[in-house]
Amino acid sequence: MIIVYDVEEKRVARVCKFLKGYLHWIQNSVFEGELTDGKFRELQVGLKKRIKADKDSILFFKMRAQYDIEKEVMGVEKSAPDAFL
Amino acid sequence: MIIVYDVEEKRVARVCKFLKGYLHWIQNSVFEGELTDGKFRELQVGLKKRIKADKDSILFFKMRAQYDIEKEVMGVEKSAPDAFL
Image (cartoon, rainbow over all chains, first blue to last red; front, side, top):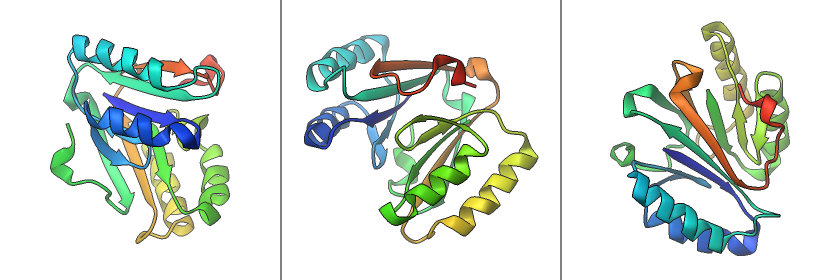
């Protein structure tokens, strides 16, 4: 799955640190990785506590399988290629 | 497809405006939509002219089909739901 967050500056570090416990950081506000349903629910519960639902926004993109998606980078590659899924 | 950009502040407006001509803006630095192969190549050529490849980073996530991906939003929904694909 891919997660992109858009949260207010004061909550960025907290949200980013929390997500690092579950997924690979691949760009500025983008994380990617595989999660079981249980881990995903845990992550959502934790995120809800760390954001303000009326101000912040988190996007979750869920793919059924790794081969459903093809990733390409233009410019600077900010994470090691093997960090992908 | 989904495009997430991470470019230096001075180039954000230019990149954002350019992408709006091809895709739907769904969050801060995230765009989403369908593109033919031709339009995608055109978009890549245009983006290359507008970013600095040694400083900026653009991520492209390509799905073969719309049903390959499931989107979920937590918090503020920043674009109309019908703007999705």
